[in-house]
Image (cartoon, rainbow, N blue to C red; front, top):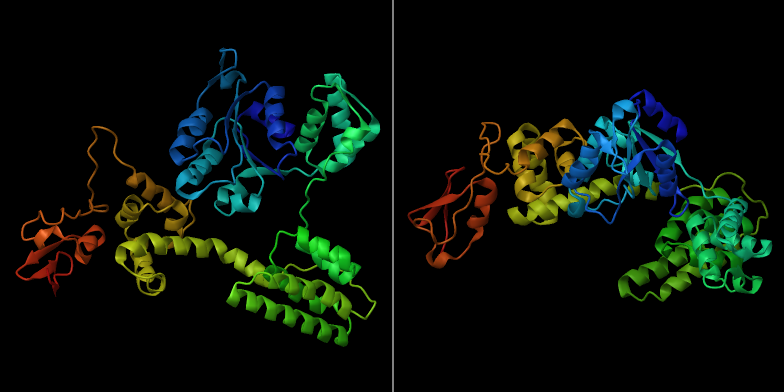
Length: 475
């Protein structure tokens, strides 16, 4: 981090943004603030509690990234003379739909064009990088690891000494071990115990409850096939953040590699198939108490079925099924969102939208820039949705241009009408147009007018302004 900060002394470096990756509570934000203090930089920070739409990021972060700044004491700091400010986007992987609409394109512009140092902080780098290629290729990534208990204890001793808190070595070690690598939690535990008394005894630290630690499915497979400990397997399954159906996929993936005997494989397959019967009954009857029987079959039943003492020592395998579904999850989610937004206007079901509307809409949007802007403006498409529709990344030139054209014109400015992006036709109010339906009752054709042009009545039928086909309707 220091090397990256010093590279700014010679002007903007090749990687203008830094990404700090790691679990909560291990010092990512504190390190960024400490770096700014060490370099004498000002700080502009945006986190999840701030509004982080594209416009908000442009107004705060992008504007700050392109101009000189003022110090905390009000003095002018010229970038030419080394005065800079650090732009911090905390929890950059927590961007949600319309609440943070347009945030990723603005973040991409910040990464590529900032004239001031910028740091993005995230817990899940995959979730952040899958939305943009710029995060992968145009940033410098640094991963924070959980500190060891000895490192946490050393920090706690320094804090206690600086605050005048009397605490023994045994108490410090117990607080550090209980935090499980979460430095923030360790400091808060020390503060809560020392508050009001100025000292911490071993009896008080002994009253700390154990911090909940989530186990992974890797730990569960290890407990079942390699340790073969029924009690450990049951505890690990309870601590896993996975339902029995997901666990069955893990067991099924690793079972052929962990069973070194044909008899073991046959017996374990029988236990797993019986667990699948319980899971099927759970899906049909919604009796979730059957999950406990399925879990026991996948842990105790499989351990009892293993007779060959040989144990595998290679890596535990991640299920290929989950890997494929994970890679396609984002695309499936975007496709479903398109079906809800556009299918509601075209009055088509989700399956009909996929089969009858999406292929033609995709081809048309790829060729018509005006239609892309209209889709963004009229139907509120997100960058990832429009990118999926036209087969481009959400930070591509075509997507950015569509969002720029879809922005409302400034006050007093007439919107430009070009042949490429014609002004969309609007449906008049029902019952007020000449020859409209009696009583102003809305019908299906009123909604058609929004997407495909208004229809006008001729005689007893309705003639489409686009297709010139006549459809007879009843009042």
